[in-house]
Amino acid sequence: MDWQTIFHDIKNKHDFSQMEAFLEDVYQTKTIYPPREAIYNAFTLTPFDAVKVVIIGQDPYHGPNQAHGLAFSVQQGTKLPPSLRNIYKELESDLKVTRMTGDLTGWAKEGVLLLNRVLTVEEKMANAHKDIGWEIFTRAIIESISAHKDHVIFVLWGSPAQTLAQFINTDKHTIIKSAHPSPLSAYRGFFGSKPFSQINEDLQRHGLTPVDWAREEL
Image (cartoon, rainbow, N blue to C red):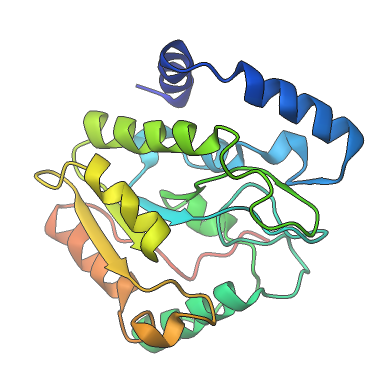
């Protein structure tokens, strides 16, 4: 099984022609993030066979030089957004790991699929592409991972991500839930939740290599 096969199956089951036409138009007429060639970056950097962990985000960052196709990640040299800053605080508290860059390509190459629910956004307009069809696509991705892989850890931060729990087979997969790391909710259960050590302990219990959360790709 690979992403190409999964994408093909999803497109056979769902009609994305309206979404594709919409994206074709807005990429030519407006400022849209991430760059078009980076929309599917998460899948390029984390092949299907390599997926061990899935971290669900919402929609891409909507400022310049931020989004590059990985949930929560920003391009090299870009200031850390508040949610990512809180993720790093929890990582340091949990595993004493300090990261220097906001680019999470290293995590992606460790088998962490950094998947936003919505894969595109208009500049300065959070949720601008909500309900154009991405949620159907990404839900189908989650269902495919659940169906075709044996043990994956799904990290669902915040209630929008947690609505996906119903599509995950918990007989063979693990779900880790907490509040979202955004400044609005991080103090309501994200800080102190220790997701990174939980993930690595769970991987080791299933005979899998833990994630090197310190890995940087410079």
